[in-house]
Amino acid sequence: MIDKIEYGDFNKFLVSTGYLLIAVGLLLPYFYLKENFDLQIEQEKIKGFTITAQKILNAKQSFALNLINVIPYLSIFSISIGTVFLSIGGYKWKNKQNIEDEKINEEISKLKKENRKADYDFDILKKGEKIPQEEVIKNKEIEIEIEQPNISSIEKTVSAQSYYLLENLISEKLRKEYSNKYNVLTNYKINNQEYDVILTSIDNNISKTGLNLSKDIIVEIKYTSRQINKRYVLDTLTRVAELIKRYPTAITNPVIIFVRTNSEQSFDENKIRKEIIEEWSEKTIRKWNIVFTTLKDISDLEFKTILNI
Image 1 (cartoon, rainbow, N blue to C red):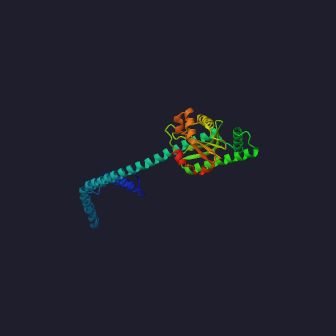
Image 2: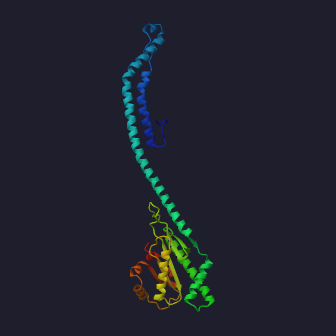
Image 3: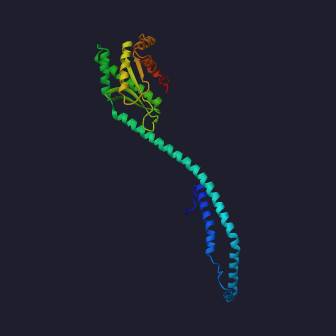
């Protein structure tokens, strides 16, 4: 039984008051019957009392006689009012508690999803490592030297540094546009594969079994001064296919950005797309986000249109 009335919440107040009134209604007959009201005193003894004592005793016995007619009604009234208070307060309290329970369950579910997502992100970070800037630039120099064997050492270094800065520029652009949906990792190595940019989802779309239903996005950036032809594009697509294969979880359609340093250089994008479709799955080409642009136009890239997210 509630030992005190709760004043902090009106519904609790009704419930505790209801319990109290029911208890009073049940205990009234008991306390009335427990009290003898001096009804067993013999008449001869009463005559020996003082006049004042006799008046008090007569008043007490008259009160007991009148009270016996009222007690049942008081008891029934108290129990009835207590039951009404208990019912109303209990009903409203239960509804309010159900709402509170739903909020708590939602918070718990949200925390579980966040914990699973944190575990998932940690797993990605644990399986990979950030590539140091010096190593990234060195790898870019090797890539440039393969594409342009006759390039000078100074030009190669400058191009590699520009390549590195371009990747960071694109990463920062993605970070500004999608920081509410994705964590953006730049120059990351996972399973011995180097990824230019990775967008890991923070959408919390986690199944009950802990499976991440939100897919990540990889972005491959090619920065070149050479003429972009079918073979160059196909080699890049083959590399991206390997990156997808070696990635530790499912990803959505990748983004491949071809950036030409020379905007004046002739380039037929429709012809290139038609040629690669002839040797590559048309369905894949249609789904993958393949972008051709120039260094001059890179700031105008609309990723919301490209990614459709």
